[in-house]
Length: 272
Image (cartoon, rainbow, N blue to C red):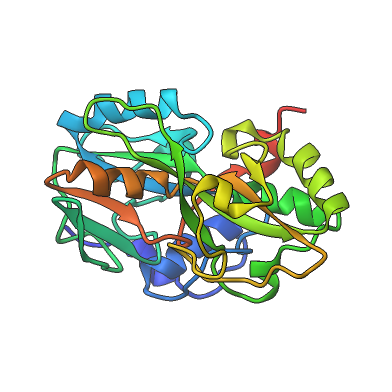
C-alpha cells in the first residue's frame, strides 16, 4: 500500500479546508498535538478492531454513550470513512497511533501502512475537543490549550456497562474552572451529547478513584488553582483502558490527545 499522492500538498495550500490541511500535514509526518487545531472541525478518537470483535464493541458503545459516542464507522478492511472527510485515510492521517497485542502497547507508529489488515473495522468516537470550542467562545479558559499540552486524562472507578470481551473503567478528561465557570461549562456541554455531553463529576477526584490529580494516566498534568475545582468529562480514551483489560490479540487506537481531524463541523453536533 502507498500513501495517497495528496501527501504532496503538505504545505499550506490555499483553498483547502483546515481539517483536510491538518490531515495532509500529519500524513506527511508534520505536527503533534491536535488540541486547538482546525478550529470549528470535529476531532475523533480511534478504535480499530478485527471484524470478529466489531459487533460486541458496537454494542459496548451503545451501552456507554457518554465515553463512546460513535460519529463514524468504516466498512471492514476500508481505511476510508467518506462521511467524515474528503481524502481521509485512517492509516496515515493521525499524528501517532498505538498498536496493541494481548492488551499491551507494542508500538506507537506514525502510520499504519505495515499494520493494516483486510478485516479491520474503524470506529471514530466523539472527542471533547469539539465542545472546547464552545467553551472558549463563551470566554471560559481551557488550561491545557493555554499551556500547549495534552488534556489530562484519568482512569476512574466508574465501571462501564460490559459487552462481550469489553468491560472496564471509564476514562475521564479534566479541565479546572472557578465554580461559576464550572456551572456555565455544564450548561454549554450539555448541548453536545455526541461529544460526551455534560460532565460526569465535579470536584473531589478521590470519589471517582483518582488518587493524585497531578499524575494523569494519559496526557499531561495541568495545575488546579486554590479557587478552582476540577471538572471531569467522559473521555473517548475509555476504549484504550477497555482494550487493555480485554487483552485482545490485536487492536489499534490513536495515541491519547492525538486525534483524527474530520470535516464535520462542531456547530452541527449541538442539539440546541
